Amino acid sequence: MIFKLRTLAAVAATVLLMAACAPADNEPGAESPAADSDAVMAPMFEVDPLWPKPLPNHWLLGATIGLDVDSDDNVWIVHRGSSLEEKELYATWEPPASYCCFAAPPVLAFNPEGDLIKHWGGAGEGYDWPVSNHGIDVDHKGNVWIGGNGRGASKAAAALPHDESAMGQGRVHDSMVLKFTSTGEFLMQIGKPFMGEGSNDLKNFKMPAKTLVDPTTNELYVADGYGNRRVIVLDADTGEYKRHWGAYGNEPDDTQLPAYTPGEPAPQQFRTPVHAVTLSDDGMVYVCDRTNDRIQVFQTDGTFVKETWVEPETLGDGSTFDIAISRDPEQKFLYVADGTNQRIHILDRQSLELLTSFGDGGRQPGQFYAVHSIATDSMGNIYTTETYRGQRVQRFMYKGIGPVTEKQQGVVWPSD
Image 1 (spheres, helix red, strand yellow):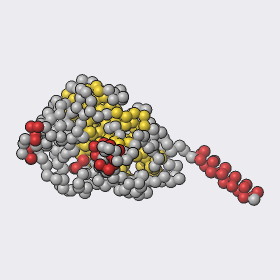
Image 2 (cartoon, helix red, strand yellow):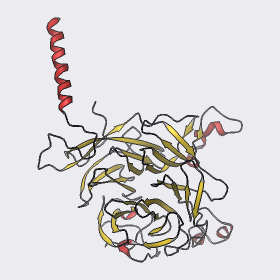
Image 3 (tube, helix red, strand yellow):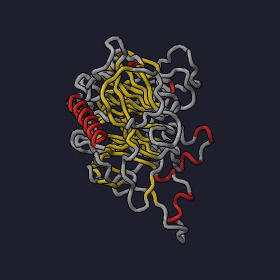
Image 4 (tube, helix red, strand yellow):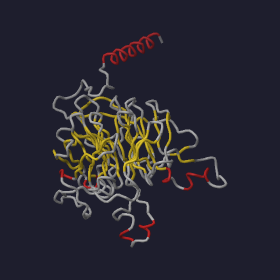
């Protein structure tokens, strides 16, 4: 017995010594000491199956279609309670059919521990809440921006022939973006419902998918979006128009393109939706041209730089839903949410080479159904949301840089 205890003590001491000598793996850019110098290196992740904590009040998430991380590493999401099924909302029946459940407020914020810390949103006085909210951005001043991709229907549109109704010029409800404080106080609306007149309209949008504010210039970038085919830039305080552009920096053209065909000549305009826009510290603007399966890169003035295709055989909803940038000082990597192939792709930011991917279709932690939005925190962790019946937010813990052993990793389940 004494021998066994001494042996166990020795093993424990060895394990503790190894742990003490091992480099920290929670710092963005930290490399594995065992890395082969010739191996392709990429960030490594594991899903955190216990984040976030359960919502209170019998609240449920619907299609979760917006995500951002603020300067305090709080995670913000926006979802559509209207997408919940009737039997998910028994408690709202008259009379109530059960204790459970209710749609959560549209905007929710979680702290890094997974606690719900803020909730608000929906229709209010002085602004037009989107028919179908889409995208959320928390800017450097702590303000919250929301877009929408709801078609809706005006009385004028209802009187038109079917092919000229909600998708016709000026007939789309969500032609605006909204700005709020972090507590939900309304600040500004840019654009008006049913007023969008196309990709060269300087006053309104047409189903804007995502926004971001450049902290160095205080300029608002909008991926615009589901009806328009452009990126548009405005002053984030006044809403004053600055500039806009389409694919390759061209003037946007709203001519309807046929469905995407793999291998076709590169289309000179974006297909809808222009689904996401993000900005690197060195002034590169990354735009997700979703159903073209491509990412285009621009300077902030709209000058085209380069492009790449991601899983270019993908049909349906396309492969480039959203894009985030790694948090190491050089921002070496791009993370692309692929809601059709149910994966997160990791690309080299400079070469745009696909290094590896993780995830798979399914309902368990680390799997996806229509992964829609992606963001990173200051520790390098990745957050994702899922639309349609996915209806959730997940966290993937950054585990350092390591050699790529598989192009497709599958579910990155915790190793412990």
